[in-house]
Length: 248
Image 1: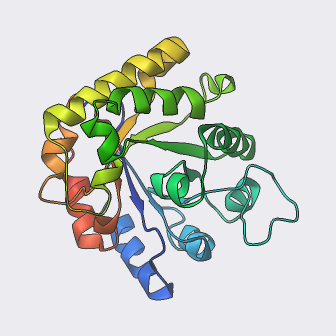
Image 2 (image 1 turned 30 degrees about the vertical axis):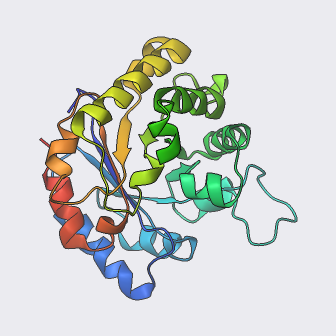
Image 3 (image 1 turned 60 degrees about the vertical axis):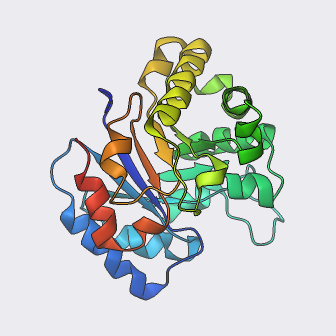
C-alpha cells in the first residue's frame, strides 16, 4: 500500500432495495479509526436514505454516474447537484459499463468530472482495457489515453481518485496477476504526474475487477495500489468488511 490514505469503495450497480440498507449500516458499524476511507455507491433510489441512515458515521455515500448538465429536459438522468442534495459526496464516472453500454467517450466523462466538482462531489474516474486490447499489447496505451482524455486540466489540486478496472476482469472472476496490476498502476501514476505535476502524485489509484476477500490483501499490497473499487463483494457487509480489514 502506498503512503496515500487508502480508499475502499463499494459499487452496488443495479442491486439493492430498502432491505439492503441494513448491509450499509453493518459496514458503517464495522469501520474503526481514520486511517482508511470507505464508501458505498448504491443505486440512485437509495442514495438519500443511505446517507441519512449512516449520517454521523465514517461511511461515505455516492452515486454511480451523473449527467454533465446540472438540470434540463433529460428524462431519467440524475445531475451532480441532485446527488449532492441527496447526501452524496462521491460519484463513479466513466465505468466501463457506461463506456461500452452507453457509448460514453473520454470527452463526455471529462465534462461529467467538471460537473461533479462544480457540485461539490469527489469523482472516481474509471479506466481499463478490454481483453482484446490487452492481448494486443495495448493496455498501457489505452489506459493512458483514457486518463488524458477523461481528466480535464482544470481539476489540478482537486480531490479525486482514478480506478483501474480491466474490463475483462469485471464480474468474471478473472483477476490479473499482481505484477500485471502493478505495471498498469505504476504507468497510471506516471501519467498523472506528467499531467498534474506533484498533485498527480497524491491522487489515489484504486484497483477494481473481481476483488474479493480471498485476493484483497494481495492486491492491496501491490505497488501504487491505493485502494479498491469493489463490485459484487460489496453487497454483503461480511464480505465487504473482510476486504476493508485486509488493508495493511
